[in-house]
Length: 488
Ligand code: ATP
Image (cartoon, rainbow, N blue to C red; front, side, top):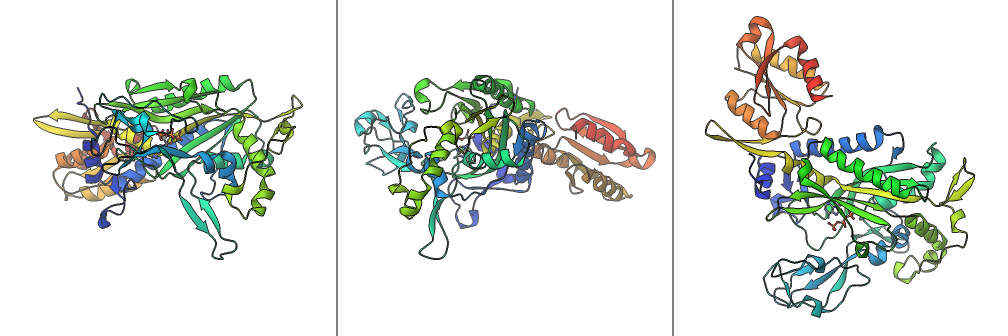
């Protein structure tokens, strides 16, 4: 039986084998930012490709988009982020560490229930039993205060027209801002979705657990637009669809679960929200959010209609968002610029939206954790990553058994041919057993070895990562054999 994976094992494997490094490590590192090395970038690209393929290419009701990271500041005023995208934090009076109030726990490990910013009890009294996670002092906190999570930056060289912009904290708003463009320029008809993958940035108060929570990360989000009244059905559809995506890519079902949000946890506009949680190996094994799926009603498009109506105030106040109040909704908002005309029913409405919002880095971590395994083989420990073939960074490694008798040439030829179809790795250094073990650790599903018998009968040895079984395949069949096994 596989032993319980510790995050430390994953972190050390990732560094040792070039999956993930600390950002700016040569200068001591930059907290909560990470770089993906040669194997890591292949893995992460495969996660993105698998998401894009399943959610966009394989469906006829979702189209793709790639929005800019920098957007007009009014996008964030209308979405509510400029005023409300903040975490409630409290500072320990002893060690000055600031912690998210909802991450503080009492001695028994009980966390504060989720507290929406608007309604939170904003005094230190509510924290008398809470323990500072940094120094362990109990109940010595300042009054909770909001901390804005968006990073600011400046655009433009001239003082007069330079603007303060935000690095986007989610990719979703770029989709809402392009809803009309997509409807007007394509043949999409409701129900349909728009999906995108891209970087998001949040100045998180507490970062933790490797790439689980970072300040720069990638999201994969879909806004699925549907007619009001059909939203429940689509919400259930997307719940199931997204859950199965993880399972189909190899995550063990017992490590996944749904957590439906309590009504008091929901944003005021949301009709429902569920997290897909994964049992991450932090501490003693902890269920944590992997992806959120929300029924956002027609809130966002309505907000952007209000934003569009407020643009004059934006100019008048020279872009100072703090001085701007969003204009009230037009009475006939259902006929507004972001409404949709249903040709068949001859009616106009603001679509409802179901939003599956996944984290690429967080799911990459889940795929790594779930694939990690250690086995005892002939008295030695074998570390391996049992990635599904679709996610494996390298699909096949090609080895000559020895560096003579023409074996390297044959192996090179095979490798060059296979590279046209999938990622391959050529290796001729060291004992064959060690070469196999290195590929096990990289998660490579198959190794192909050119050996003495190849010279006699033109067959090669194929070795399966998971079973370690070895069998022979003729060189002219190796491409078809592996493509079939890898399903690519
Ligand atoms: P949390 O409560 O953990 O801060 P959230 O509920 O604010 O997360 P969402 O806004 O729903 O997260 O974002 C959707 C997804 O984006 C999350 O499920 C997660 O996979 C990913 N994500 C969000 N914040 C981060 C982060 N700081 N680092 C890595 N991934 C993130």
